[in-house]
Length: 349
Image (tube, rainbow, N blue to C red; front, side, top):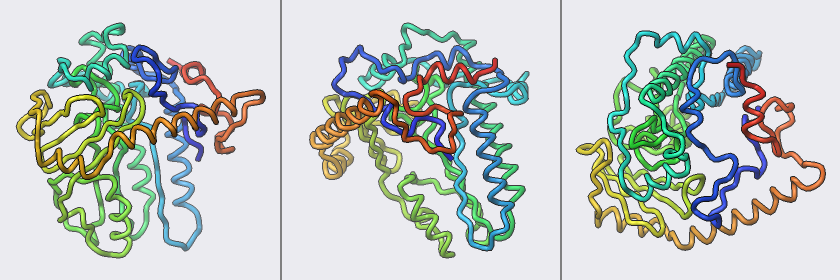
């Protein structure tokens, strides 16, 4: 399938902008303010088509072994779901953020400025509505996955994961993009009853291990992630930062380093809200130094941004040249489309 968003170079950050400059596709808090039930959105249509295509693949008369990758855009902002899923939480007490107050660190300040949190304040009721919409979206994806599981046959290994979480008002932040646990923690559920006994892996696991895990499961061996604890390394080079941001997690300790800013160090077991910056962890700091050269990475990213933005300008000059998969057929956001107006055209409140 095509992606729901542009496949060209439309959405490339620009670290040479001033701190108060925004690109038109950046997030703001409008998604929080408009949470609620809807009849239709671009994202809802996309996920429904994902299910249809997955079921078509499973029904196909094809004797070959199958690897089926089914990627949903939900749960995700905007926090709008069909009325069925909104009403599923009618009368259910929605939990507020556990740690809603912003923390005065550079990363939090920068992310709040990017989403214009001071200009677009969200009331307590709007916060709960957005969280309700998110829970509704989780239930919707549960049902989507359920319809696919019902169609599976034979000895099928099922892995459920995601690419990011959502801060959902914790620390005064929303969406992804933050190095804190609400944003970076994702599910990893492996169902392989003929290979693995039911158990919970308590040490941190990285999505970088997912490819090797799939190969091990396909070969009939126990995944190494079950027994092997290792560092979890993350890089963030996109919307909301102006220099490389890296994170290293070892056990319960986490170090966040952004070039040009003081380190953030947390013990996520004793401080799950990540509010008490320990300031320094020599062991993790040395591991970050060994893994990354942030000055070199910064220069490389800036060169890449300049090249990509040059290509984007060229593709938009004269007749727009689209890189999007032809099966998208203009239904989603293609190269050159205005993000906000395209979303609005597809939306039925």
